[in-house]
Image (cartoon, rainbow over all chains, first blue to last red; front, side):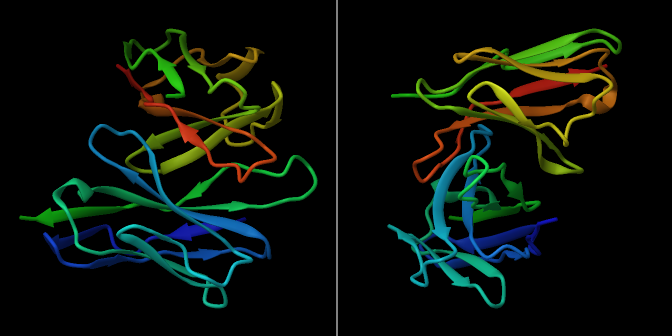
Length: 119
Length: 114
């Protein structure tokens, strides 16, 4: 079974600084996707960034970027120029990719990291 | 702006009562997921459907939970009888196989069983 581990229950960063959230995962699959979701107090799950395992290039979305280390099964999220609106729970998630059998499964989530932005 | 909708947003009920949660997936999406979020367990996959057919419900307690898709625009999750340990936020998400297949989440139903 796949597992996703987020070892930092809570992180704090000063506004405008950079913060990195850690995520490791365990899988025997070779083809999969990794995601970071943001959950603000409204509890809406918002996709922040995604990474296909077959791509070596790290994904970036504006101030958000990932450091994907496939061999180490590590997938960290870097938030640059932190803003007050970034304060939320951040969840790392994994999904296997299958060409047959429908092509998609449910997400496996980590326990989350609570990100606090200090003004 | 296409969104997944869920009703009700909040539900308080007494132990032993039946609870029905509803989800309207994004029009055209062919896969629907149910997740549960608790403080202790985090986010867990309960079940999912593709083209209205159940594909996996291994995460769901079978004795009291049931999930259905009566039509392409409605998914339901029922708990009968409800128990205090069922208190959680229940999320529905939808997606479209064949594309990159992002999952779009609804706002969740916060269930409290007293």
